Length: 461
Image 1 (tube, rainbow, N blue to C red):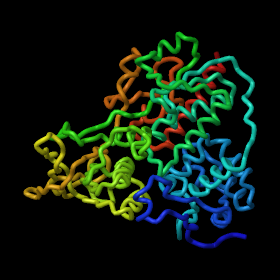
Image 2 (image 1 turned 60 degrees about the vertical axis):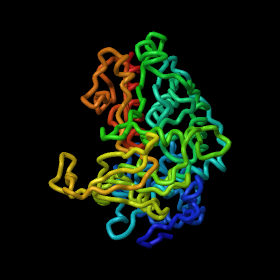
Image 3 (image 1 turned 135 degrees about the vertical axis):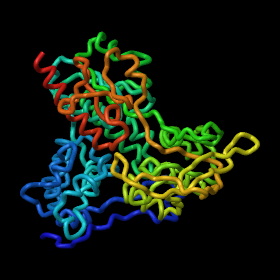
Image 4 (image 1 turned 180 degrees about the vertical axis):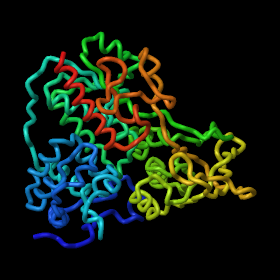
């Protein structure tokens, strides 16, 4: 029976005053009954506009129809036919601006909770399905994947399913890329990423960690070692700073460093010997998802937290859900203001942040109104830590050690958008290494497209 409600079935969450003191997952997930109730809201539209909004082409109405009938195993198989990381996507994919934004139910009410249903199905499968994964018939050709983030994992999984001998080379000691070092445990538990990686290993994918390509081996050396093609999915891990006075003080972090210490190196757990100061007042500069993640981590480590952003809330690029959760967790937002100087104490550590109020002028190239300072509006925020969450760009190591590889003025690898092929034969790239910092699902879409192109390229040889 169809559910004619205009509103989503609410997902249970931890209470704000409880969760802001722990790193357990905030959202608790649907029960089977909740999932079936929400799935019954799907209208199963003939032209399937939700699918058009999905970068990896998940067959959304088909899997939701299975959920509505209680066939969760069938729903999982449908999702996995196009999406290698469903438990991840169900948690961190911005469905509200992609598949759910196209949902017909959203015209008069709330769209179907596609992300919540995907998460439910993936979690149910992890707990209940024990299907044997049989590696396909080998094709006798080898592919190297640089980076074990969402783009690399997707490309590797798709190629392995086709029968290619795939090896992933990961710079860090744990595979997962931004999924393990960037996204906090309370949004994406790391055991989920580990289980997704184990699924790829069962397909025959090899993962070599502590392999910094461009330092240990170059892309050319991989080709010389017998790989028939290379996919570069090395992400964008080089942090940006403002260039203001005081950024070199003790207590100033890039969001990448701060989140890596907390997420990958488990600084929030007493049994891990990971150095991180438990600050009393932290200022986070930026308005994206990374800024929200850093702010919410600092709050859980016992700090009072203020997010400083130079535009208004309407212009903030972070997901609405993340902003809402941060506010519930007592994180303060100082909007329309911008740091101009970080102040030092007598020991060379942070003691405060001097800011200036801003006003919005004419739109800039991005279409957002350009902020400008208000004369004479300077003020000081108390702080003993500052986290700069201003975006990232690709590490220059690969482009500097791959002669002739074409990059743009931002250091991103240039590819054919239809094939993800670089200007070097047999070398493909995707994800943040190509686009700069973007979403997990867009990186996965690039990895999927690259796998199709690599298959076509190697099949013709």
